[in-house]
Image: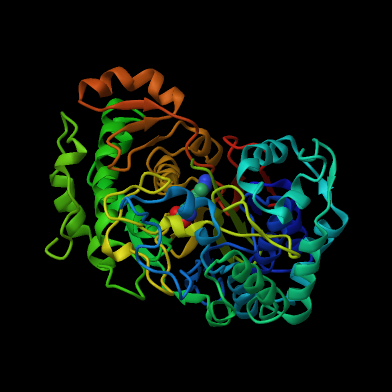
Length: 531
Ligand code: DON
């Protein structure tokens, strides 16, 4: 079974499985294919996280291929003369990009846990880039939205707007010849093509010409890392997710631990009491995120304390049932004493019982909008996920502190939350989502919907979602939940705002040994296929 946000990529994954490949083979092929067919988030010039469960050994592991700050990056590089964060520079410039990790991450996954060659895994992506594929209405729309950022890049314009500045029409064939050439380089020479060979040279030349920071040394020294996932137990289910430098897994488990103290099923899905408890829980977790989380290779993250049941109990005791606690009265806890806009997730389970839950991104749709000349490769704008200045929110309204400050070679904090849930060591659920700061809460609600509210995966996916991230102190609600409840929640003191769709989860569950997949209709174009 394969679930992704883009149909062609789902079919690529399915065909790998049908030929006897395992979930890792299918995922790597999809990871490369999405770079072609879903260029707003699929990528070679970005990074992400892959959670893998191996049936044979029962082991679950996390591949961290998050981007890193270039070696010449400096702590205050986004602060202008007035002492303010220069958003344009952080989000839309040559300086916005971290050193890409995707090619290293996907290659590592395949080499360690796959069964097919890199050449084979890349073949569908190469064909799609060379021969082209039909442009969907959604792709055209997303290109129009990102045009302003891409206009600064000749390469991006030549690929996506060559019709006198117009993106391809729905149904037109989009070919990406330079990208095909880059993919072929990788197929022929391995990931070294990207990190030391022809592509690395092109990246370094472009950076030098534009005054950017990424050098060949940044690329040769980039390594994807295999980490131990964070894990917890929620009502008898084993939950595995991404450890730092993602904040996703830590806070997902922390929130589940807090919520385990309440009879959520009894409250009823999206009842006033339920939304209140969820929102208060979310605030506590996001407050902790602002202080305690960062790249574990640079500072100590108190992961085990943050995900301990004892700490969760203490936090649960702080929740007032009757009234909301304004965010300004909530600070990060002390666990030691105690537009978003674009990323994509896919989930694969194979016949052997291997599981992959992968989220990767360029950050914004089409990243910084800039492509490396001659390569067809769009660059990420992940540097904005660092805390450029304490107390100043990033594009997702997230604030951070010292542990997430910019430093050479450091990974910026992420919210991406690929998850795998087991029950009695057997596969039960895997999911993940795009949505910036809203990723963690989207994934949380899918898990609660399935485990507490006993929904099937389709209903669990489509059910109306809510989100709170401590600051801004706003309870975001999707239309339907908000329509019914906003009045009662306002009485409890919540500042409610009806918001655009929250997340786009791509999930698989297993019930009575059968797999059920669900893509999320919040974003069109996704597909769940297989069995
Ligand atoms: O790593 C992160 O948390 C962000 N760069 C993710 C961005 C994102 O999800 C945008 N998507 N919708």
